[in-house]
Length: 360
Image 1 (cartoon, rainbow, N blue to C red):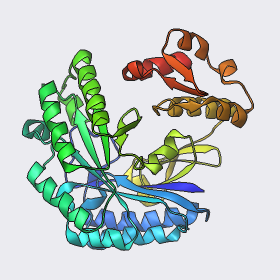
Image 2: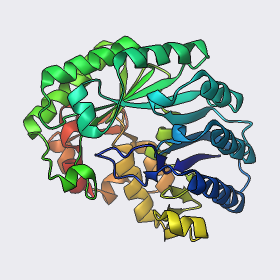
Image 3: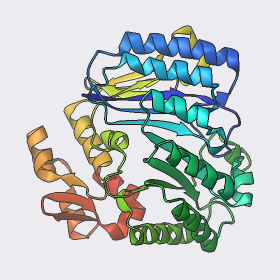
Image 4: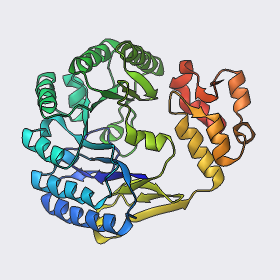
C-alpha cells in the first residue's frame, strides 16, 4: 500500500521565502499542466491501494473551481478503498463555500493552510495577505462544512521578530483551535527573493528561545510534539507525512515532485517547459541497502519518538550499532536509547542536524 503526493506549481503571488517549484498562475499553462499530469498518473501508477493523498504546491487552491474539480477527478484513477487521509493545501483567501463543497465531494478530509503569521510587518516581508478576523471566519466556515482535521503553518524567527511577537502569533493560532500546527524557523534559501535582498536570519540564541517557547506552549495546550517541526492533537498526526518519516514508499506526481517506489528514489523536473513536453524525470537513484538504512536513520530521528531499534535490526538483519556510531552519541547524551527506542535527546532537538552529521 502506497501514498500519493501531487504537486501543483501555480501561485497567484510568489512568497519571498519559497524555494519550492512554483510559477505564477496562467490559465493556458494550467490547462496543459493538468492534462500532462493525467498522462503521468496513468503511465506511472501501478494500481495498488492508496493510503494517503496529499495535494500540495505551489498553491492548489489558486486554480479555478473547474480546474480544481478536474484535478480532484484525477484522484479517482487511484484505488482508494483503503484511503485514510486526503489533504489539500489552501491559502485562506481562496477558501469559499463552493470550494469546500467540491473538496468534500471528492473525499478531501484534511486541509493544510499556510497562515505563517498574523503580524502585518511579517506578512509584508513574506508577500502574504491574511488577517486573524478573516481566518477566524473561514475556520468557522470549514467547521460548518464538516472539516475537522485542519493544519495551520506558522513561520517564526523572521528578521527583526521578537519573542513577544511569536507569543502573540501563537496565541492567535491557539484561539483558532486547529488539530495540527506545523512550525518552521525561517531559512533563507538560495534563489529566493529574500536571498537576493541579502536578508539575514536572526541570531541562533533568539531562534532557539522561540523554538523552546513554541514547544512548551503547544505541549501545555495538549498538542503532541511528534516530529521536530510538527505538533498535533492526539490522533491527528499527519498520516501522509509519517509515510516519509517512516521511510515508506510513495508516488510523487507533477512538476518538481519527488517519489520513492520499488527501491528507487526519483525527482521530477522543476522545469514547467520540460514537464509539459513530457520530459518528466530529472533523476532516478536505486537505493542500496546502506542507503536505505541511512534514510531510515535520518528520517526516523526527525520523529520525537525516534526509531524502534529491534524493528530496524530485524528489517535489515543487522545491529544498528554495527552500522552507525551511536554508542559515543548515547554516552555524551546526544542520543537516548530507552525501551528499545533510539531518539535525539529532547534538550538537543534544536541541533538535530549537527547530531545527524555525526551519524552519517
